[in-house]
Amino acid sequence: MMSQMPQQAALTNCPSCEEPLESGDRFCGACGYDLSAVPAHPDDHPTLAVNGSAPVAAPSPAADGGAPWPAAHEPAGADTPPATHLPTDLTGIDSGDSGGHGLAVPPPSGSPVSPASGVRFDRPSEPDEYPLQAPDPRVTAETPTPAEGVKVCVACRAGRVDHDGYCENCGHAQPRERDHMEQECGPMAAVSDRGLRHHRNEDAFAVGTAALPDGSPASVAIVCDGVSSATRPDDASLAASRAASESLLAALARGTHPQQAMHDAIVAASRAVNALAAEPQTAREHAPHQNAPACTIVGTVVTSGLLVVGWVGDSRAYWVPVDRTSLPARLTEDDSWAAQMVAAGLMNEAEAYADERAHAITGWLGADAYELEPHTASFKPDRPGVVVVCTDGLWNYAEAAQDMAEAVPLDAAVRPLHGAQVLVGHALDGGGHDNVTVALVPFPAPSQGAGSA
Image 1 (cartoon, one colour):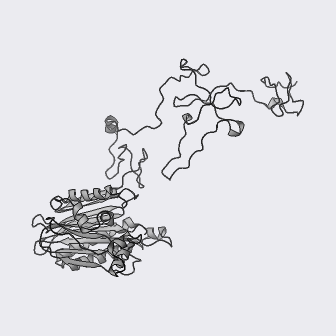
Image 2 (tube, helix red, strand yellow):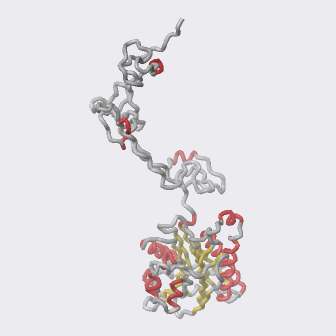
Image 3 (cartoon, helix red, strand yellow):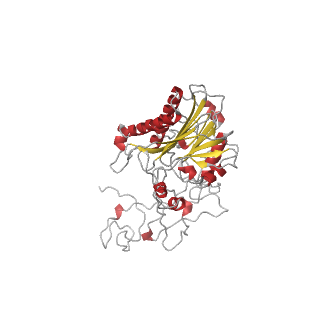
């Protein structure tokens, strides 16, 4: 007995050669196509969009006359997901077109229920994006308190932050600690900001106070700028600022002359940066075409009657008197191509600093520096003022001493943190093309409140 064939839907033409068929044919009389292999024609139910949009039928390839989906864009970076296309991105095509393909027309407004599927289409459309909302305090209260030392996400306030800086719960990247830093220390203050164009902050600073052997106070500020073309510039600036500050504070407490202490501190900072080139982590990352970690440095020591500055590179120190009728002054000379051109008499300062090579530095801290030449200078101002210690992220927007004096608030000597904030804002308003770091140190050092920091 022959096995019963599956029940077939009536076909009028051969699927293979389009030859007309007769009722009951099992094979095409023209090409011999096995008609039993043709699956039953499905009921024409539209594919529904889950966000409540109009139903759409799966579009056929463009070659068949259908409406193709737009091409998906490649992600812009590792942290950017591919662009998502919604059904509403496609132009509707009447299902009665000649090709019989494309998008199904939504039901009339008077018919909220699709007779084919029973799904309602009169629900309000939902947004394409769902903005984050502040965590529900009731839910937050029920969240277990994280273990001590565990960093918690600033977005969801519940997830633990992994070592890469992302929340394990909601996936949000966390703000990095060095993106914006502020510190007050005794009579001085410092502020550092990532700026508007850089992906990380490669500047660093250190501020502290010490008591000299005679009991008088001394203020110390160090500012370092990582060389972006080198490996790990952020590590270099941090290591240099810490080493220089520690060396200075210890030497001043022992009674070392401030200018000598500054020279020795720059040497200590250089050694700290050089040591980074020998670390295994650097060795793994280091490629033949990359330089060793490197940075610039500028610092000041302010006592009751002496102002000392030291530097290598193009970070600067300025003197701004409290009485603005007195002239301000720049206290450092850049280790840069532009400064060399001016010193050699080949260009004036305006021409040199307008050249695209102006900021190419000729001195820096790092294992591949040509030769370490710490610069130091001592001054004895005859009036009160404030020392501005900064990276080029600030002085690019106030290069001349008079320009810097105009940017410094009149009360900077008594409100140094506010003054530093204003100066960082000045750089950001100017474009913020680089990291910005500034320390403000009043002169003379106050006679009260001194202590080791």
